[in-house]
Amino acid sequence: MHLKRLEIHGFKSFADRINLVFKPGITAIVGPNGSGKSNIADSLRWVMGETNLRNIRGTKTDDVIFSGSEERKPLGMAEVTLVLDNTDQTLPLDYTEVAVTRRVYRSGESEFLINRVPVRLRDIQELFFDTGLGKEAYSVISQGKIDAILSVRPEDRRSVFEEAAGIMRYKVKKNLTLKK
Ligand code: ATP
Ligand code: MG
Image 1 (spheres, protein in one colour):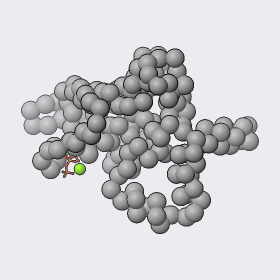
Image 2 (cartoon, rainbow, N blue to C red; image 1 turned 120 degrees about the vertical axis):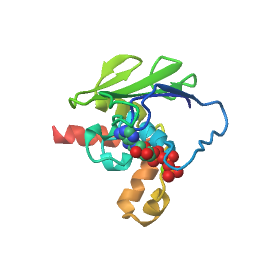
Image 3 (cartoon, helix red, strand yellow; image 1 turned 135 degrees about the horizontal axis):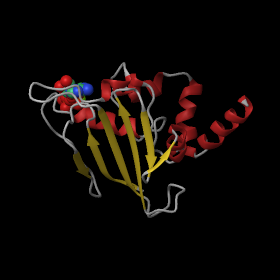
Image 4 (tube, rainbow, N blue to C red; image 1 turned 90 degrees about the vertical axis):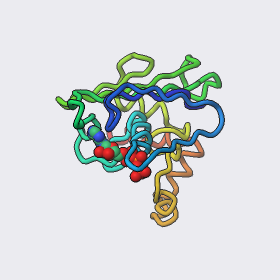
């Protein structure tokens, strides 16, 4: 499984619809300060179901929506679509390409889609459990994350290994069942 495309529209500094295509191998994103490099990483985390706004450098839900510039009016919606190549069936879906979309409107309303079918946030989070992707995973390593992994409590550190070992899915299901 690998990241094929990232489509961003109205998310943070990206007022225009952009389509980033990732070829096999290493991709580096370069640009001047403030040009939106970190916003791309934020969009990736967000579409994978991040709910902690601090992790995407925000405080309110609508901080992710383009807030306008000297030449452009603010937008009413932010949308990010992540397209993954699933020919190896890493994701438990019968598709060779999986598109995950997240949208949020200024009204606060939000939408989640998998291959254009509306789903719940939880479905997106579950889709990524134990794949190495997703909000609790290690696919996006931010500045400081390595230090955090080394310094946190052993139980927190264990969750990184549990995700890698592929048992996160079962732990979350167990906890949900116990809560019922
Ligand atoms: P650096 O090299 O300093 O790390 P960067 O390329 O990572 O820079 P980002 O942090 O991705 O830059 O982008 C910051 C820019 O995004 C700022 O100019 C900020 O005003 C803009 N920005 C953030 N949120 C929004 C928003 N909701 N609407 C419009 N612009 C936004
Ligand atoms: Mg940055």
